Structures are given as C-alpha cells and as structure tokens.
Image (cartoon, one colour):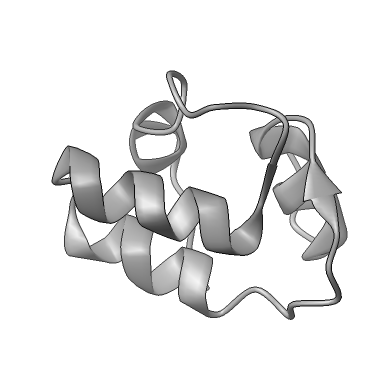
Length: 64
C-alpha cells in the first residue's frame, strides 16, 4: 500500500466516518484513481470505522 498526499486528498470528500467497504464504494462511484481503490482494498478489514484518512494511515503503520 502506497499513499501519497495527492492520493489521500482524493478522499477528502468521502462520507466520514466510514468503513472500508463504504470507502471502496465511494471510490468506485466517484471514479477515483485506481491507486486509491487498490490501497483501500489492501486495508485489513476488521470492521473498523475510520474517522479520516489519518485513521487509515496510522492503522497501516504509515507516518503522516
């Protein structure tokens, strides 16, 4: 999984808070770049609800 600030910014208007599945649905419906969709699909799904992109980054061990 490789997030850049540009890719993360594509999720600014996502319906936060959201689950992994909700974010994937948003990415598909919004026509976000394939890299965003692939990154979301790589998240380990433990039923977590994410409040923002920062939650995804910290849960993935990625520094902001």
